[in-house]
Image 1 (cartoon, rainbow, N blue to C red):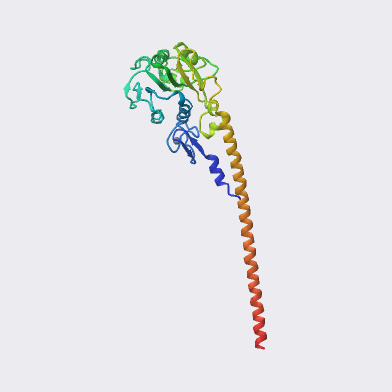
Image 2 (image 1 turned 90 degrees about the vertical axis):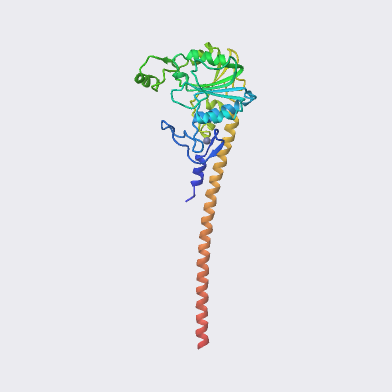
Length: 310
Ligand SMILES: [Zn+2]
């Protein structure tokens, strides 16, 4: 029976872009039970690992940053943004869930000067804000001319945004998925950004790293991040044409190569197991043959002694 436990272990391996390690242990299920969500080493979720990759791709645009702002920060995202090495880091939150931040502030009234922010990260906030267009205009106001905002919201394709700030908490759960959400975005999210003076590019994990690397990096294929610049024309040169980072073919090639190397390794393991079995069989035959030889020699000796006694 060939030993395949090693091969199985290799297949479970992934790379966590948040803590920068190859992970051999299984990733843990997420808060809603979805598989492969939580890195067993650093506790990152899919969106943190994708954010880490995005920050890497955007690195040429993120040099020498003055102010980086994080709205509703998490331990994992804060660690990632610390690596960007900005001169000033500001964390803000409205304070509903008592998370530790530098200042309590609504995203509709940011305590920041016009054009002062080089990078702003705002994940899963706008769906909570009754006047989200005011929040978008605030983001456009504080971004510097070179500034980038990374936004994430729950969105459905093929429908318009559904919203109702006056809905009861029970109704919000039913219609918007959570008792403190006031809307579920649809296809018009990008045009809302545009109306607020923000140009955006949608980026998904398959577009950034390719289909086969999505599993290796333990990302969610349908996640969308909006990479946003102030103005109507500007967009990230790294991601502008919507075809991703240009790394997808390279990742596909590397992972294809890795899969072939793994197949070769499994074949070699099977061959090594077969050879070991043959060696063991030969050893057994050899020791049996030498036992027979010794028995024959003892027989000859006994006969010789008998003859000598005669
Ligand atoms: Zn990790």
